[in-house]
Length: 540
Image 1 (cartoon, rainbow, N blue to C red):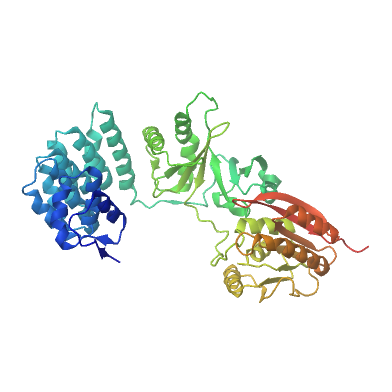
Image 2: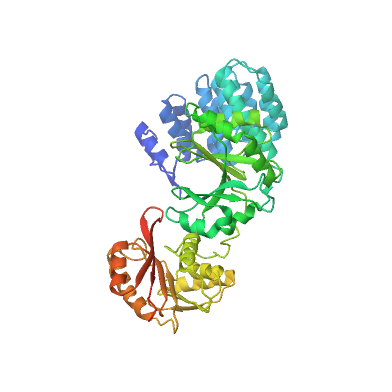
């Protein structure tokens, strides 16, 4: 909600800055003329605050600025044009846009440059042609730089043709024109419909692929892929395998988070990072992979695993790749491929298919706070195994992903899920229905519910004490449930879960005569827990 500035005409610089920082504050109409006058004489930081305040009044402030321009001289004219441009961007007013086009002929350099910058955010055919015409008559190098940048944002084929003719000894103009050509080229190519074809065969199969998973689940991914894929663990959360079938077949791993193709990178450590990434993306392998699966122009974006945008480095890499492989388009907005660069003992570059639909977890139409990610639920299910006579109980069912992933794994006799939260049960019902899985769900406490005779598998991700319960409550809850599980499980039955208190729960299970069959620390995304499996011994 807007409120007027305090009713006092003359305000200090600090007061104006404070008002500008509060988005709900705007000047009174009586303050417009004094503020426009002050805009022409104040320091630059105060001018920015006044502009922001006046822009909140829209057309009225723009009219006052245009009237002041009739008598204004340099350098005040530049500030007034900048204010009009700011308002034009927020209102998309055609009259203000026409005023800015006329300002391209202003006598003051700052006024012309500010008009160019504002028009670079007001796309229209008339604006593009006006900027192209301004380029031909403009003698100021800084203004030419701004024209090139604006054409890269709002131009079309005519602008691209002009940018391609620019030959300059000024390194900054050369950089801006090069970046503008790159941006405009990918924008003009964007209307073409491109998509990834998951049914296309992998080129030069069998080919090396990398599958990324949570750290600690690598061996389960290997088991899931099978010996035919020749999987091997090559790093934390990283499994290498060989793939021969269509691209979409790699989704047969329900535990992996994603997959990609490693690209050849120079192993010589003397090769600079920039050159190594360019060599990988411009390699025949990168081109073959992207063209094999992309129906249309292959478009990629660069991602640095260590974080940060690295805009300068990203632009130089994209420009160099475009020079070598013009059929590949760098497009951070609408890309089907992500080139992920990891720096460590050696540089690696992976191509991840961003535009490929992941069919594995489409059943996840509802979520519950602290519920399992489906890849983690799939890991629990695989560790628990599938027996045709299984009666499976998830006592902390949440959104139902563990039960669904167990159903996907193989045959069973019954699926049972309970939760104290009625909202969680309703959401689990929707997910189960979307997955086409039948289960018996009930609002009940894990320490009271009777899942029935012949319980062979308890499969769950219990509260970790980070969202649902206080940390001090989890210890007693887990200990009590282990005692109950030891009584309820049939001989040979299994308990598979994730424990935030690994040593405590392992010791408690041993005390209850449950045999520990598996334990592995797993990265839960910000903290570690342990994947544990226990078995109730069979009677002799």
